[in-house]
Image (cartoon, rainbow, N blue to C red; front, side, top):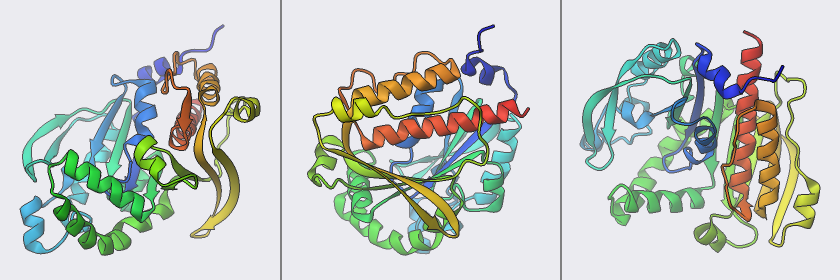
Length: 320
């Protein structure tokens, strides 16, 4: 008897799987969950941006002399209440923040899908939020990288002036260190991003960075679920600079394994990983990086995270 397509299993399940992603504004949180959206599609995946839960608009924050990183500028209790409802499959009336105007739009009815992603500054801030998240991720680029990204996004996509963004960066840093950075302690995985050892310009020109994936050891494991890197493809089919390294570390008393990837790898590496996930989940096709001769470190980490998240979801299904 053939194994069921795991996408069909999720669709038929009453369970709402929650994925929480925390990190500073403009840190790349959406990028590292994009693979989940691509694999399972809009029919099964919904996303909440926590900026919608600001309690103060842009003018209000300016008047009170605080930034959006301050918990006082956010409706965290309402977020907790909504998350609990959404986990039960109950729609909520969700606030809506407009980044262009800096004000609030009318609220909207939000109905959860089978996979619910929460992305924002305070995703892992309280014990209640952490309790109702099934998998947690913290994205932590180096300051220079983060600042470059934030300037590019806020100027090109949100209509800010460069001077306004630089002023905001300076104002935000103390509150980032106080309220946002400590959330790393509670994440199942932490992604660090720095400029490539092969040249800083590669980041701006080709989106090539050095990416570190720090992970807790899996508390649960499933027989016959694995993800293997093909050394032949890595060593024989690549013609560009890359490096792979694994080290162990300790963060806040937790033992972590760190996979450090830099440069560009042959697209064959990712194709084999995608095929492995297809074989294990019966989800076809998985082709996140279609028609790519080379993939970046960030691309590879995105796919590894997809596997880890799917692994967690499969385990939960087998325990039901």
